[in-house]
Amino acid sequence: MFKIRTRIGCSIKELKNISVSVFNEEWGDVEGFVEVVIGGDRMGYYHENPLRPNEKGGEWITWWLSLFLDCANMITKTNYVAFVEPETIGWLEFILCNNIVIFSNAIEVGSESLPGLSVYEKPECFSYREPKDIEINLNDFLQEIYRAAESFLDELKSINPQLMESEVIKRILELYEKRHHIAQ
Image (cartoon, rainbow, N blue to C red; front, side, top):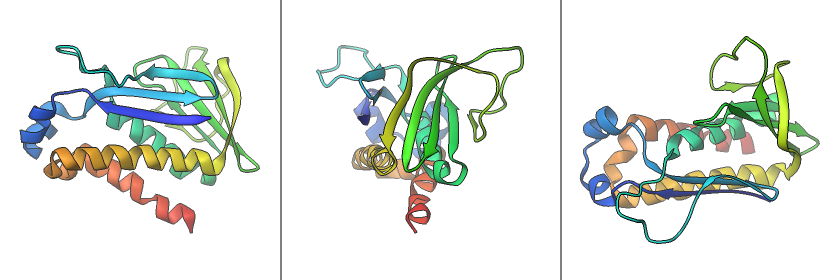
């Protein structure tokens, strides 16, 4: 099983009325809840209950989605993608083998840090922890990433269509549009 769930947690009223320039300068992302379910393991936090006063979630939704969209766009080209799990020291590793994506949770060991948020060749400095070696059908993997991105973009557009012109949402849209090139 592979599932990505997101929920906008910041003020919908503020999002509805915010300008693109203020969003770009002061917000930069949409705060909320992100949960990734791989096999039987859950990462992040998500709920559908009414939000408590001042509850916003603690995840940057577009950051997560951009990492997963980049992974979806690159996995069939490189057969390997690992990216930093936001706000942690961990890495999420995906290896493509015979139309199966093999997921493992990794951490860097050693004194040298990997450059950037994503790598496309297996580094030697990874040590593994649970969950690891979880198999996901490639088509299911790609469809779930694109579904999660599309669902988030549709929700955000219904709240404030102007935000589709913000820097971070343009980046998500750019990554999302690359899916057409992969399918061909």
